[in-house]
Amino acid sequence: MIEYIQSALLIIAAILIIISAIGLISLSSSTKNALYARIHIVGLFDIACVIAMIGLGQYLLAGIYFILAPFVAHAIANAYWKKEDRENNIDLLTVEEEVDENHPFIHPKEKMQALESENSEKLKADDRFSVTTIEIDEGE
Amino acid sequence: MDILIISEYILVIALVIMMLASLRASAYKSTSMGLLGSSIIVNAFAVALLICGSLYNLEFYRDISLALIFFGFVGTIAFAVTLGGEDK
Image 1 (tube, rainbow over the protein chains, first blue to last red):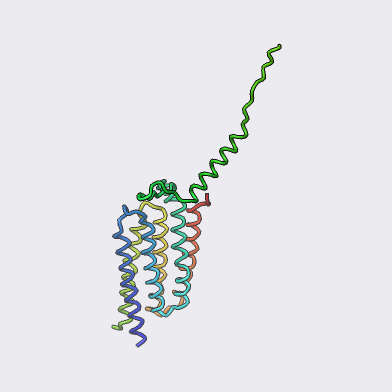
Image 2: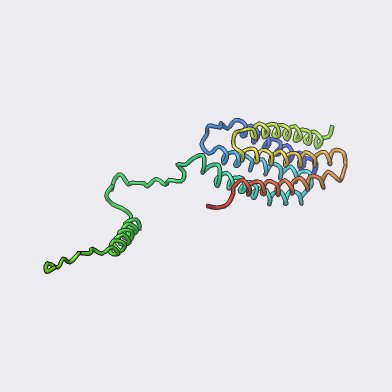
């Protein structure tokens, strides 16, 4: 009976691994943010490996792999985001402001407060320059 | 033929297909994609070694696969940290 359960687990793992292989290949490179999608697919492969290890009776290895796999996925995604994605897509660094089309003249309170504080700082900076007048003594 | 052995062979074939797919995927232009592909290959090889160990009743395959999983993890993390650089 245990043999049947083990073989069922192994076959399930094999099916999941083949599905993830097809997904990894068939995902087009022109897709936006393709690497994050591929990391997502690799998550399926990781869980398939954990199922296979359980089916083979290696529970400790399955536990270790189950804990370590998310760290790897996060590290790769983080490295890609910090370096390649930012350098290749400069648009990511500029944040577009959303304008409500129904109420184009209504602005959020925090934004207006920030603008007011900027203006007040400019005013303070302008106050530092005092206008000097030259007094001309007509008697000389 | 035992059903367990058949399923183990099926799993080995699936792992080989996954290795080939990740080899193709690691050849894409991004460096992170190469890192991801190498990580997949190491893990697939570790599971394939476990299956070989159970097929031929050899114990030391388990130790090698444990080392592969652990050091593959360490290498991937180290390379990812180097690739990411410092925070700006």
